Amino acid sequence: MDAADGLADGATDGATDGATDRAGRAGAPAPSAFLGRWTIRRRIADRLGGDARFEGTASVTAAGDHWLYDEAGEMRLADGAAFRAHRRYLWVPAAGAIEVRFDDGRPFHRIPLAGGEDSHLCVRDLYAVSYDFSAWPEWRAVWRVRGPRKDYTMTSRYAPLAEPEPGRLHPVEH
Picture 1 (cartoon, rainbow, N blue to C red):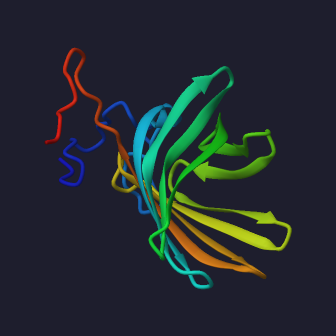
Picture 2: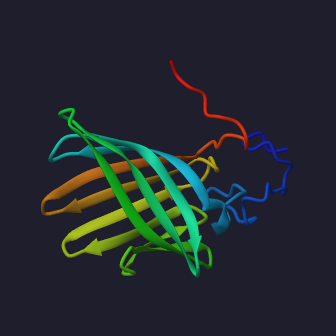
């Protein structure tokens, strides 16, 4: 039994494709394991403009031959200013990866399902990302963005959003 995931050696829980991550651990997520709702906690360490934080949710839903990734939440800047933020991408399942596209269909980058890195060059700005699925179903994406007027690291942590059982109400805080 693997103490890290509570599964017998070689067993899977249905949310993985049996592959291994870069460290050789079993359990790279299957593409369909991303479908559903996620909590997001994001920290942006901006060397040019101060830190920011984002907290919200993301949903990944099937839409024909691709999926819609929608996230929404609150962005809080270093000076305390807060505002609602939203973004949408198209995800296309591919062999060993998910191809991420902007919502207009232009290619952005790939999510390697075994964990790992990819990048996107946007004019003179380089967006480099590293994905870590070693604690699946919790996972992390770390973006390092560099350019003439950009220099920040953005760390996003995702966890499955616990849905209430059918027929149960959300608890009310007093």
